[in-house]
Each structure stands twice: as C-alpha cells, then as structure tokens.
Image (cartoon, rainbow, N blue to C red; front, side):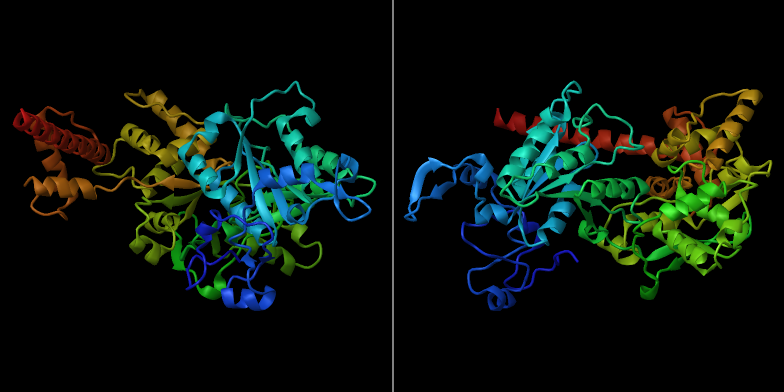
Amino acid sequence: MPPSLARAPGTLHASQAVLCRIRPGERVCSVTCPAERESHMGRGAVCVATAAFGCLGSLHRRARKWSSLNARGTRSSRVVPRRSVAVPSAARDTLAVLIDGDGQGPREFRAALLALASLGKRVHASVFAAQSKLDLPEWQQFLRESGADAVNVVPDNSKPLGDTVFAQAAIRALNSFSCVALMPSEREGRPPSDMDANMDVDFVHLAQLLCSRAYDCMPRPHVMAVLLEGPAFRCPESVGLARAFGGVQAEVFWVNVEWFGFRRPLFRAVLGTTPGARGSIEPILVEEERGPLKDITGLVEHLLRLGFMETPRDAIAPAIARFWQANVAKPLTVWPAQYPLHELKEWMEQQSEGHADTAARSQDDMAFVLPVGSKGRATPHTMGKYGTADCKSIYTGGGPFFLQSSSPSLVEDALSRLGYLDDSLNADLEEAFAMFSSGTVNRRSLQVAGVELRTGSLCSSAVQEQKELLRTAFLSKKLYGLWRTAPSDNSLRISLASKGLLSRQDAPPEEVLQAMESYSKRHGLPIRRSYNAFATSMADHLKQAKKSLRQANLTDQASKVHGEKK
C-alpha cells in the first residue's frame, strides 16, 4: 500500500518525500513510524519515504573517482581501471530510474517513484522527453518536487540503439549504480505525436544490451522494467512487454494502481436483460469491491474467438455485455470497468472443462449505451456522495441500456433515451444531430468511430445519411458506449428567473420556451427549432453578456481610479 496521506505526529506527508535528500552515511529503513524506525535500525535512520530521491550527480562523481587502497591500507593516487571499479555503498543502495516521457506524464511518474521507493533503495529519476514537454508547467512542478533530471531529447532515427541519448545514459548509470530501472511508454495503439522523442529506442533490446554488460569481477547487472497497472486491468500489450523483458533476464516491476491514489467510486452501473430497458445504478458494498485483473489475455482471446471482439483494441466491457446477453442472460455490472472482467472470468472458471468454448457466437450486434451526465467540480460534497467525479457522471446518466441492431428506429431510440429527441419540444432531427455531436464527450467518441456528422440545413437524403453514420457509431466495437446526455437547463432557468422572465425556476418547459422567445425577439437573437438547441444558445448568450458586463464594470472602475490619481 502507498504511504498514507494522513500526516500523523512526527511523520512526513507522502508529498514531502520527494523534497528530501539523503545525507552521506545515513541508513535507510522502510518503517514509517519514527519510534518503530529507531527500534528497528537505531537512531539516525532515514525513512524510505523521505529517502525516495538521492543525488545522482554526487554519487556518479564518487563512483568515477573511487580509488583503490594500497597494501598498507592507505589510499592510492592511482585511479582503478573501469573494469575493476568498486561501487561505493551509497551507489549500491541507489536505484537509477530512466523514464520515457513520450506517452506518460507527471501523474504516472509520481506513482512509479513512490512504488519504487518502497523497495528500500534511494531512487533518482531522469526524464527523457522533448523540450516542449519538459517546459509544460505540470512537468516543471514534478521536476522541482522530485529533483529528477530533465533530459531534452531530439529524435534521430538514424542512430543505432547504443548511440541514442537514452541508451548512453542507461550505460553510464549501470557503470555507477547497482540497479537501473527502465520505464517505457506504451507504444502499440497510441497515435504518434509531434512531441515523441524516444520512438527510436527499443526498450527490450536496450534491457538485453544492459544485462549483457557483465564485468569479469562483478555480478550480473540488475536491470528492471517498470510497467504501469491500469485501474481496471493490465493491458495485454503491457503483459506481452513484461514477458519480453523477462525473456532477456530483466526484472519486471509492476506499479500497482494503489500508488496512483485513485479514489474508489461508490456506485456501479448494472445492465439489465431486456432490450431497451434501462439498467440501474446501485451502491457498491465493501465486500463487492474489485481490484484490477492482472492478465486479461485469456478473456480477450475468448471474445475474439467467438466474434464479440474484432481486434484486441476493441472496447472489452461492451464486448462482455454482448456475450452476456447471448449466453448468460443475467444482469451484468458494466461499470466500473474491472467489474465485467471479473464476472466473465468467474463465469469461465465455473464452466466445465471445454464448455466455455462452446458458448454461443456473436450473431446480432447490439448498441450498448452507458449514458453519462455532467461531472461538475470535484467538490467535497461530490467526493463524499459519489467517490469520484466519473461516478457522479455515471450516476446522473441514469443507467445503461442496449438496443438491437435489427431495430429500424435504433438511432431515434438512442437519441430519445439520451434526451436529444422527443415528440414535442425536441422533434427536429437535424437539431438533435447537431446538439448530440456538439459536446466534447460525444465528439471524441464519434472521432474514434471514424464518423463525422454534418450540421446545418439538410435535405431528406442527407438526413438519412446522417442517421446511417450515427447508427455506425452506436454499433462500433471500438467504443465503450459512453454517450453524453443532453445538457441541463438549470443555469438558464436561474438566469431567466433572476431577470423576472420566469415565475419560478421549476416552471414547465413550455413557459421557459416562451420566455426564451420573448427575450430573443427583444435582443434580436435567432429562434431555434428545438428546446435543447434554444436553451443551449440562450445560456451561452447570457453567460457571455454577464462576462462582458463584468469586464465593462472593471474598466469603469479602473478609469475612475486613474482619474482620481490625476
């Protein structure tokens, strides 16, 4: 378990650990309580949490200049050849961590360094990334806190592995310290970025290169690979990478999810067994809490074999939901993400040998939808009631459901269940399309599905084309099924009521629509064809008007102050 964030008398907060240095000669202990530490190691011992980060530069210089003793026991001026360098005790107790900054950031760095500190060694990190990343404020803050070295890397694919900046630094660290840890980024499935700087480094090959650098008079180098565990599972790519590192004699160190300090959601989303019927949101009991799975390779292979997944990169929870409807026909917890994985694993273990492979194959696809509402701010009230902001969005979404692909009204049904379409105030399908695709969550999901919806005035054939595109998105196996519900009109109601345009904030939608039309006519604003679109545009206008008024007031006050000074 990670160091407690609660600061007991006489102990250090975990965030303070990264600011501490170890003085030469101090001993290291993994006991946090000062009283226990003194009884365990004696006075003067340093807690490993406070000794997380040592000084790489001074230790490196000490190792380079370490000289031998002559026959009389006095220090000789002759420098020992590198082949017979005796590593000082300070260097033996130091773990040099070399971090690939391409696909990860300060949150992952902090979790990894805290986890490595639990091994009882001094830890010093070096982050290798493009300068544009190293200059980001959150990266600068991490570098200041941890004392890690920032190494600017300019990509150069023409260099062999041994000549890359990363490899050269790893070799130098191995010459000075007893253990070197490599922390690679996940590459497979991640789109390339202009900020990538270490794409020319093959980390498995580098680990093999380091492990082969054994001196005649020294033990085999200790090389570690640091891999991250996700909140739901260890992704198959990371598991495969772990096997590859093990094959070249490198030790694999998993950073468990507990080190990230994630809060636990207090509710779960349960999918029912009837098409179209909304599922439920239920509290998570303490005895029902589930952690991440260590390896989901077998589950993915099972779903691929039966056709519920098309590629290993497909979203696994909706695939399990499709399998569940075809073979189990029982309610299924689909969120948090690790829960359906545990349920499928337990179902497969309960089947007689070979029976799991005879399960029904995928035939009729279904659209899996997990509606999400607004997260809002992570206030103490939100954290206390829901556990996490994500859990709040799932709770306010109302519960998951699925629709059969054979239904001709699949798109209309999904939009209606999400609040974008109805038979009265939101009957315009074109504006429903525009509203649905305008939100950040939905727009990103459409991009992943490879769908781009057109907005504006559409002819009947274009409307039908948009429906087919949206149908493709709802049935896409790449998506988890998270779709944002129509935005709330609460803020608009408050503004209109404060202006005297509404009799009360909980007035019926028809009265709110009349107030919006009246306000728009007076201020020359366009009239929209649906309530949702009208409410959104009106709320944006009122927000901008309030901001402009505030800015004007500040300008007036500044002018008055300037006039008084004159």
